[in-house]
Each structure stands twice: as structure tokens, then as C-alpha cells.
Figure 1 (tube, rainbow, N blue to C red):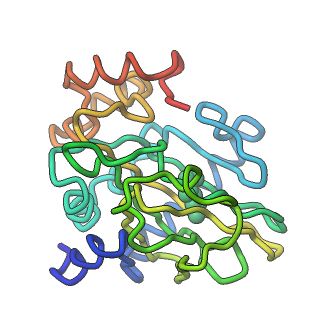
Figure 2: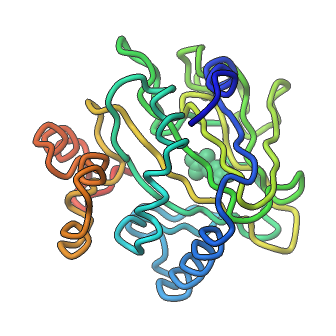
Length: 258
Ligand SMILES: O=C(O)CCC(=O)C(=O)O
């Protein structure tokens, strides 16, 4: 579980870094599976969700390997997510984003899903899994500490959301490190100026009363759903009519909220 000081940091700054969190065998398994999926899906990789210039993506990962079932239920990650959301929550999506070598542009600063805290508080929390090292040159994620408390989207208050922000912090780390982030905190990937890709996985959670970014019940094949434990079924909101109602009315037909 997270320590009190890690929880405090998450609350104060909007993110906390868990160095070398991913056990080495799990990291190896993740890398192998991610490589396999990129090779198998080719041009279509990530197309269920979206394509992004300068990066390759994978989506709907809970359906694409048992190792991902472990990813979404790691206790410290759930503890950190609960620290942000403070209410019952569910997985919103599990994706990979690999920044291509020599990308000129940083991602714009953003809050995931354009989410602003509401009367119940924070409702989105993301976890960035460093599958590769994150360095100053290869597209490490940047975040502006404290901005989750502003209740503002960056595009509404700053003139150039692609430019460096005076208060931003670049979060570097060794492969295996995980960042738990209040997803209302302004953040974004930076440019990769190296000749190798930089791969991250994002386990993204939302509060019980909000739509999932990827409607897990619709997207997971029957064979995947049938092997899941009651705890995982609950985390994915597979048996939750309220989630079906909220997510189906907000999600595009494919099962993905773009
Ligand atoms: O991959 C990263 O480092 C950050 C990506 C991100 O923030 C996003 O795609 O929303």
C-alpha cells in the first residue's frame, strides 16, 4: 500500500512516482506481449481507440492477455486510485502509447477526458507504467504540480498548451517505474528526440458514476469475461447495470469513447 507521505504527495502535487514498481518478470512479460501485439495488429494497432501522429497505440488490453488482468489490479495502484477518487471506481481503459523516435512535437497539456472535478470531487485517475526508461530526451511525461486543484482545463487558461509550462515537471525514471496521477492534473507526453521508441502503458480509472472510456462489457470477449474473478468483474463493472446505462449512452458504437 502507499505510505501516508506518498498519499499526501498525490493529493498535493497530483502525482506520485513508484520507482522500480513493476516486478522484473512482469515487465519482461509485458514487453513481450506488447511487442507481439504491435507486430500482430500492424497498421490497425490502436484503431479501436484512436491514432495519434507521432505515436503508436494499443487499446482494449484487458482482452489481449492475462498479464493485463494483473496490471489493473495491483494493490498499490488501486490504493493510489482510491486516494484520488475517494469513492467507488472502475477501470476506464487500459492502453499502450509508444512515442515514435524523432517526434518533433510534445503532446498538448491536457486533463484526461477533458475532466473537471465536480461536486463529488475528482473522478479520473491515471497510472503511467514505464515500459521503457523515461529520459529527458525520449518523450518522458511532463506534469504541472497542483493544477488538479484549479478546476480548469489548460486549453481554457493558457495560450499555448504545446509550449513548455514554467512550472512543469518532467517525470523521468527507469523502466519498471509507475506514476500514479490525478488525471485532472495538467500533463502530456513530450517530444522524443532519440532514435528509439518510448513505450508507456496507461491504466486509467474513473468514478463509478462516470462513463468508461472503453466499455469493457462490450469489448471483452466472452472467453475473457468467463475467466475473471468476482473482484475483476467488479473493477471492470461487468455486472453493473448503472455502468451499462451511463457508458452506453456516452460511448460511440464501437465501445470506445473518443
Ligand atoms: O504517454 C505519455 O507519456 C502520456 C500520454 C498521455 O498523457 C495521453 O495520451 O493522454
